[in-house]
Image 1: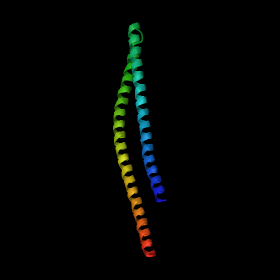
Image 2: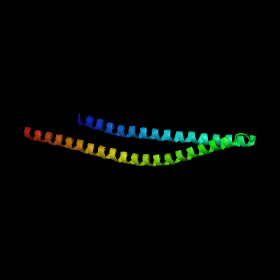
Image 3: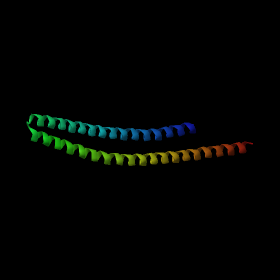
Image 4: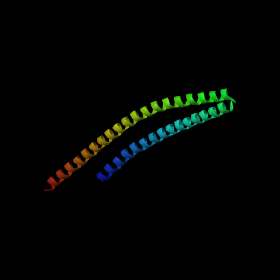
Length: 128
């Protein structure tokens, strides 16, 4: 009975930790996808600018779009760096916290198990 409770508690703690990691990783993946989309827009703006220069038509508009796309991409890259750094720090903190809680839980269960064994030994001795 105690072993089942211990296993269940371990599974819950570890699955919570992995679930947090999965959500965090998914958020980072979404962030990188948005950055990649911004890079694609920047590259498209560069191609449009080259075409506008070749045709000598709407060059100023294409330059403005290219500059806006460049600014957007650079801002997105800077934010992504900061977010990924914070995510890395949060992940380490969360893993440390989860492992500490798991260790404390195992110590608690070990003490309960030891107490049960002491009581069993005591009742056996009284029966003899």
